[in-house]
Length: 321
Figure 1 (cartoon, rainbow, N blue to C red):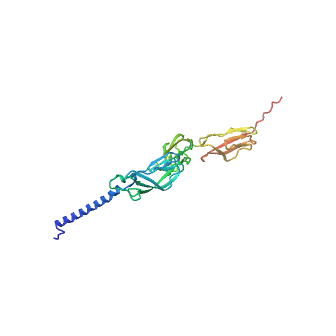
Figure 2: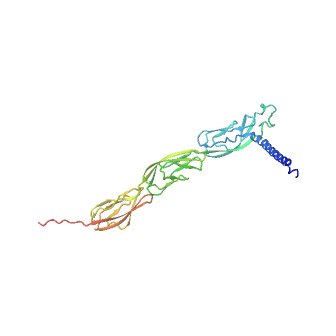
Figure 3: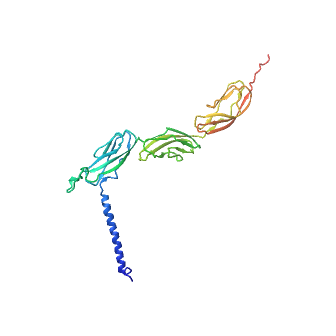
């Protein structure tokens, strides 16, 4: 049995491996400790977004080194209306929207207070200065707007892009805080679905941007009944006599448009396509069969078939004397 294969040999190998692991751990601790204590900016404190024409205030923070700290603007651009002091405070009222990038240098100045410590020859900082790039995003106030009244029709697919977002910073997140359960809102603020019953519904719409700023608005959703023609017959007319007969409908979304799709009215009688009113003085007796259509602004159409009878005028003869 060789020395390596003996129990004593195996124990020596194990001790050597454990020793190597301990050495590696000590090296990692020795390297990470200075890194954890390194002088520089506090990474957890970064300039937040600003809102146009709204007071802005932010303070940079340093860590480790020898406070007090001095913050020096190096290059780049601060948002118009903002300024930075040596204490690291950025303040003011931003006057323009946009993303503004710049560099700041952090210096520590407290080294003379520690025995045996002295500043570098340039006298700027006890530690090597720390420099970092930063960006401040200035956005317009987040708003969401919807028409006070949205009109739909029962059983007809609704698609409206009339809800609009402004300000903030995209991407946006849309939410229907209050709405009938069949209604949905898409990524672009598009409200869509197919109503399953007529009625009036209050909508509460919320908009959130990438900074979690939130804006809300309200709207009323009016769901009309499905468009139908309710006139079932036309009163009879007489030759040469004034005639007036309104066509009636129910539901649908105005304005409505009437049309004769087959057949024709007698000469002297016409249809007002906007109001559905039939008027005139028929010139010839007869029976006139017509197919009529009414269409609403959503393109929904209703059809009916009606007959107009025009009678001759009966002349009464005076009795013989």
